[in-house]
Image (tube, rainbow, N blue to C red; front, side, top):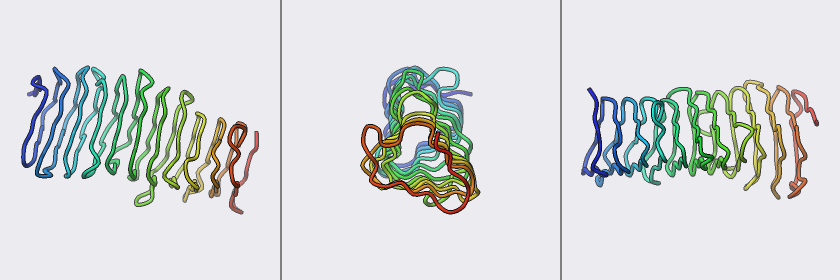
Length: 239
């Protein structure tokens, strides 16, 4: 069957487990005051905001917003979030806690909302982020478990503030990139690392891969980088 959450809030001291498809009929907050896990095991739909607050694990086990995009998705800074499928919103997506990928995922905002990973991001899967807003990586990406690949679309901007992005395969930044911290981009499997647009920020940038590093736009044109370093393997294309 299905579960319709129309009352705006569900609060427990322990766990919440929704094994069936969920539809939101109102802006909704799911909260566990005792750090219970909140598991949305199947799909979630509804043109509403969704906030999940728990010190436990928040799980999105199915596609979120696949039929009807949510207005926004927000998780609090406690606990962790597992993303097991695509997430679509018209507005922002804000993951304040540590995120792990349990499947290949595309996160998209059709209304150019910001997509913010405020903490770490890990998981041996592909991640694509598509928005005309700002994509922010606030913590290290792939520091615990390297992502397979990472791709951002050409609209909007990407802010890399967490110091490092590590993948086994390719990294493709189709939009303008700003550095908020000294940054290392690395592919352990010799994937290409493509900075297709501009790169700015008064920070150091190191790019380590046996594949091709591409600078497709002006680097430091608006805010000069402190330094740029590529490793001895692979090639660098300055276009």
